[in-house]
Image (cartoon, protein in one colour):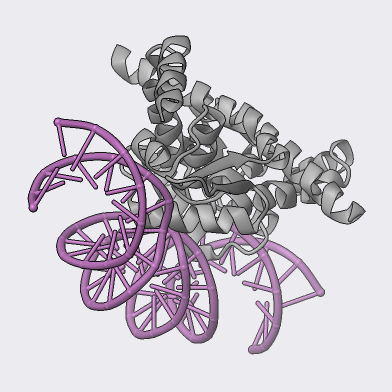
Length: 124
Length: 124
DNA sequence: TATGCTGGTATACTCTGTTATACTGGTTAC
DNA sequence: GTAACCAGTATAACAGAGTATACCAGCATA
C-alpha cells in the first residue's frame, strides 16, 4: 500500500507537469480530426485529387453526403479551400491549406501502422 | 478537358499501385483506434498508470462506464493486459502489450500537433 | 461507526455520425 | 435524344458511441 504511494511520487517527480498538457494536446487533435472520414479526405487531397467525384472514388465506403458534409466543415475550419472556375463547364477544385498539411506526419504514421498490421495478420 | 485527362494519366503513372493500399491501411488504423478514448487510454497506460481509478483520473472527461468498456474491448483485442493480484486488498493492474506500444509514434505525432495547434491559437 | 477509497455494474437516455435512396440542374458524348 | 458525367442536395431512418446518474461489495481510515 505504501509502496504504491512511493511509486506514485516517483512518477510525479520524474514526469513533472507536462502530463496533463499532453493529454489535452492529444484530445485536441482527436477532436479536430476525429471520425471516420477527415483523415482519408486529407490524404486523398494530398495525393492530388481535387475534384469531388475523384475524391469520392478514392475513398472506399464514403457516401456523397458524408463527403459533402466533411468538405464543408473542413472548409469552415480552414483545412480545405474550394475554388470555382466559372468557364463552362464549371470546374470546382478542392485543395488542402498549409495548415492542413501539418497532419501529414500523423497520416504517414497511421498508414505505416496499418501496413504493419496487415502484414502481421497475414503472417498468422 | 483533355488537359485533365493528360494530368490524370500522369498521376497514375507517377504513383503506381500503392495509392489504394495506403487508403486501406489508413482506414484500418482508424478502425482500430477510432473513437474518443482509445488513444488517451493507451497514452495513460504508457505513462505508467496501471490502476482503474488512476487511469480514469488521468483522462479528462471520461466516465467510469466508457473506461470500463474500452478496457474490456482492448483486452479482447490484445492491446491491454489485466492482472489481478489476490492478496488483500485485491490489486488490479492494466498494462499495455508490446503490440499496443506500436501506436506510440502515432500518439507522439498527435500530441505534437495538438501542442502546435494550441500555440498557434494562442498567437492569434 | 461513518466516511471514503477501489473496481467496477446497471439503467436509461441522448445525440450525431453514418447509411440508404432518390433526385436535381447543367454539360458533354454518342 | 438519350445516356452519362459533374457537383452536389433532400429526406428519412438507424445504430451505437457517448452521457448521466445511481448503485454495489469489500477494504481501510479516522
